[in-house]
Image (cartoon, rainbow, N blue to C red; front, side, top):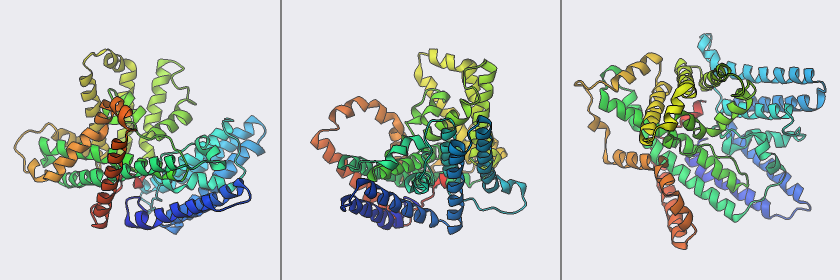
Length: 466
């Protein structure tokens, strides 16, 4: 079930919010009982939400929940000696990774087709982080299976993140306070996230898909650059818009999740880009792979080795396609270059716009690998960026007035306006006129987004495949 679908907007979300509100007002003898009932209701709603995509997928997620719940209990309670704890941890991790391998990578063997469950990479990594944290003594063992199941399956972040670490929501599962201000901020985040997804990302997706469907060797530079730019904007507004909606829904239900994006396209280095892009995934690999390997505490060689491993695994995490692996290796090379010498040059460079040009070009080329069906297609596409000979396709055939307006809005709103006027906004955002205008804009964007959804406008979602 997509957030940007008629069923979700008109039925599922209003019912969940209404029941949650009623449960917040009904009289219970104890507050703990109220929270327990609300948690059970959200668990049921989340299971229904996930089962909508296929009942067999639900059984798989239930197995993952049970596996990691037992894993956390075994690591934290049953295994007293360090050796047994480590053995139990390795067994649980191996079973999680085995499940991921079967559903995400078994098709590469060509034996038979395996359907990919929605969001399996997200909920598997999320559940594993709990077991890791119990092993390291960062969080206590969760005794309630239903609360752990809610942590893994909570529908706002279930199928596309952000990947929530257990320590971030452990207290919220036991006691959380809902408020009007938190609900309003969540509503605002949801409305703007919906507009990012439906108005901007979907428009850019139409352009990108049309161009990528053409014969790559005949694109020519103008069309190739437009296709690359359209996909660069599509994937950001698609994924960050979904994250905004997830964070917003979480707030409306009393949960507060960490940010997942922080204007990554304004970065001045690839290192900075990865501190701002898909923050929850970057943090996961840093916390559970990079630091355990030694991080940057050892020799330069060891640090470079650890970076290489992390970005190779990041590419592999995205799926069973050599283009994803090449994308991960591509960033591994860039990160190593910045670690060895390029980062120092970027830091010393007084002309910061040059840093931005280098970074955004590097990121856009990376997205070519990410989007292409094969490495050969990606290489040819990159070659077309510099092909200024006469070609068959004209860029004007892809540029309507709507596309131009959305393209301009997407570029400006990908962080440049927000960072430029941050100080001014903080001073005036509390004024009545601004609050009123903001509320009206939210309503207009929400209505327009719903109109586009109801009209059957093209509505893909990139990260459902992961």
